[in-house]
Image (cartoon, rainbow, N blue to C red):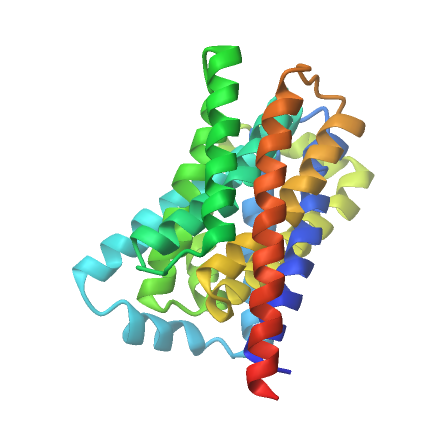
Length: 299
């Protein structure tokens, strides 16, 4: 299997797992989204360390630090990425139970479009006609939302504008997916543990509830596997194709937010989504065409 095919499979699997993770804040109520975030960080860190120990060995982390974090500048870029990732992890767990599920889904819908822009202006990847048309349609969708609502949700903007920076900088630094993500979670872990100790009553109540003994390990393993697969696919795929495949997650998140979480949607929002979805379909068509052309070249 080629790197391109592996990247596609890993990316789609990660999207499916992310959509399942979106429901954990709902399943773990009555604790808050921030509580779930802190618990998720602890369980995910444990899951990632187990994955790394099993697949690469514990010595992989010191080797990674010595090889990739060789200067204060690279450490600074890495730590800024860790902060970026932490904010996204928190938003992902907080939004579903605070009536921001649809807005975060909107951010994930715009994420592939922003990744295409990043590929064009940051990495100097050339755009074809389909990609250009997709960007125009997405821009019209954003303009329609601003015109009808006189605002654009901060959760949408934070997701679609800030998260691409994480993927792009890690790609340029050539950070290995598993080691980089494990270090991210290790650095976040002390803050999560401090939060849980500060909210000791909630933590004790969770540990005393039998259902959480099943939900917490599942939360950690699903998080560790989904994030590792997603970052690995991001290293294997061209930025444009990676952005195109990312449409699966927001489509599932939108359906879950509306059908399971019962998040209200304004009728005018469907015009916004329609324009953005049409743009995404063009990106899908373009990605499919790119895969077919790549396959023919390999034959």
